[in-house]
Length: 556
Image (cartoon, rainbow, N blue to C red):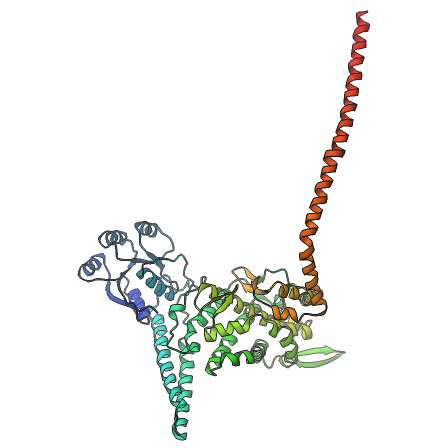
């Protein structure tokens, strides 16, 4: 966080908005609202008597003239205009006057903090993103922002007390004192959990998550890493939750297990995974897990996540009556699905790429390696990659939840009615869908996966506004390449042979092709042309001789 303190003048006629901005900025020690003004006259009077580092100017109906006067009288004073609209004639006119920044009311308040710091430091910031909340029209809810401010300050106090208790526990304390300190530590952890749950994110705060935030300045280096990545975790999970409200259609060329679900069930499953994963990350933080422990326990973490989601999605006591050889038998779905834990773990969960790197980035602020370059927490590159990895993780876990359902209860009528898309409820369509999945598994195992290993890539399933799509990201996979054997290894040899022969084969074909064209055009073509020309000349000469004889006969 910057050590410089920016003295701000807030000019806005809306008292509620001014209260909201003041409440929100109280959480940033380097941003201080020195004065407020509700009219142009009051603002000019304040500027004549005091000095400021930045002006926050609401661009109302009568404020364009004030903006022009400020640019003329105080040319070195940065101006960040605030507006409820994305585009208007007033905004365009203000931008032409040379204002340094523009922020849209109703978008993420964290972006306002970023905008103030950039403009106050001599940079520019122009927001062109609409509000993500239609319930609040161009208003910062002061109560919501106050709640978030309380959450921040409360967490800092709790973390400071936790650090103090831990330092005392590390010292030489008696058994009685140690028991008291351990009790205090448990109470503080419970208090922190409650603060996070109650005040983590309010629905009345409009948040725009279409573009990654630069969160580096929001991370407090004085706190332990696992306690300072809360803004990153909140951003990632809020971003995915926002995308899950869009269409979830499969836009890839490969079938996905969740394609069989109704749209509402698919959305429900993905949201459930987001919630359960967020809880597991909070539990890892509460357990004070280390990076080494994370790496060794990751299979257990992924297994726990899958089992929790299976239980919550289908319901612990959801049972089916299945007709088996003319006898009706009762089956609890969850125990049957959980019997396939080992298979799902080996075939799906353990193969989800870069999960360790993602969790280490979220929990311990470890940089992400992207195209052989390290990117720290908060950089746009790291946030885009972490979003892609998290989205892929959630989609793959969802596929892993549905896969054993299709293996055991694919054609049960109650399952079809409760979960399946209406286009995939007939026995024929279900069997066709399962066959497509079987071919996908074979192709993935024997061709797509070794090809991706050989090309040092990971395919990721990600979300966008239109649905689920696929991207490829670079990552070294040398060890996996060395372990390939059998058909998978032969595939890499064929690819290598293709790479070695293809250029030479193309050049040979090109040479032969050019030679063939030369023979056709220069030799055969010209020969045919000469023959045709001779024939035409012969025909012409005969015709001329015939006309000459007729002329002589007439002369006689």
